[in-house]
Length: 361
Image (tube, rainbow, N blue to C red; front, side, top):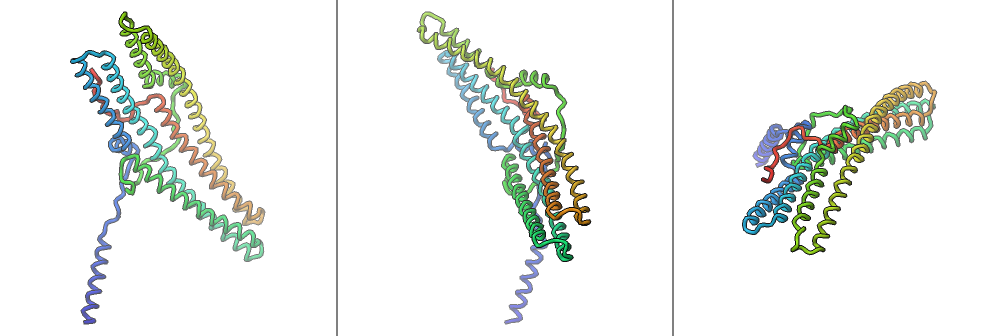
């Protein structure tokens, strides 16, 4: 009986071992930025909602055209047409916002936190090395217990910072998956990178491009034309003076709105352009500062070994190096994100233009 039981246990262990060895590792999906954008434009939940809203406005416009055959109402038909057009513009703007801001930002965030994890891992290794140096000096009587405690605290803090960076990376991956409409727990590996790429465009060119492409101007002009149409239809002996007055006020309101938009966009572009250039410069400066701190830390290590500086000086130098590397990373991330946001502010087109819904006839 015992032999039979033992044999059964052995068979079970062999089966489990074979199963585990044959089990496949979780699949990791590799994604470039372009692939991510394509997936997001197809699966993003917010975009799907905008698409359904667009379909609804189009259906209402078609209904208005049919009703207009039975009972002519130019205002009702025009209003339905403008509602459809506005929904279409919102849909197109949502695609641009997804491609140039949200998806790109989430993609860059994953890259940023992945790099930050590496920075913090190096910091942990440096802190551990410093702790060993301090302990060695303590054993020789060249360092105090307080020095050892400071080094231990620095090592623990570096480990905590690494854990935080790893947690941030996990959340960033989930945020990207959500933006792409993918399962939140899907393992992804990004093949792209981000570096400083300055935009070669002048402020004057930027303003002109925005004035030609921004949908807000087109929408304001459409609203103004609609107000003119309503006023023209009310200028007759069958419409009360109050109704005519209301139509005149509505027209003036839309005229002011168009003027406001025409002034606000150049202001927005100017502010965005100057901010972008500032962030590009900051990224360059931050990178040089990180290089300087790296050299300073190398010198500090040599000086500490020679007994020329204190333990606090060494630990401070290492902390400053880590922070400088993080600052450079954040500055690079900010410059890249600002560049994408600026392109959208210009009314920039997507890299791969999507087929637009049929315009109302």
